[in-house]
Length: 69
Ligand SMILES: [Zn+2]
Image 1 (cartoon, helix red, strand yellow):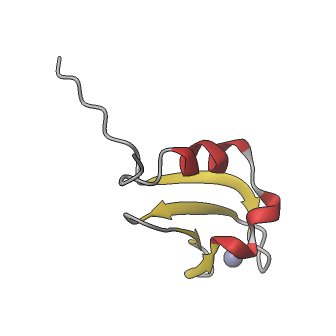
Image 2 (image 1 turned 30 degrees about the horizontal axis):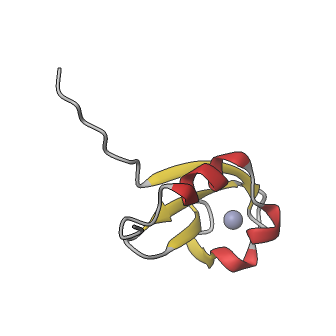
Image 3 (image 1 turned 120 degrees about the horizontal axis):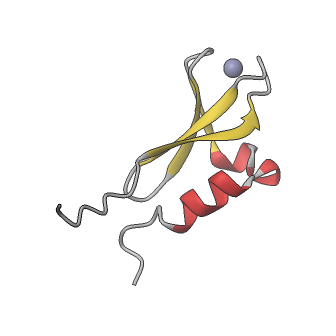
């Protein structure tokens, strides 16, 4: 068994897309997180949905920023 703590790069949230209601998937890059709707095939700035943040997204953001010291 290896100690393989890879932080996941995506997480499915409970935040509904404002166009179709599909739960958005958060994707992280190194310095920013975007929310994507796989149905609409669109990405949204997280600021558009920050007021709807759920636990999944909150803990995802907690570990999202790899350069944080
Ligand atoms: Zn959508």
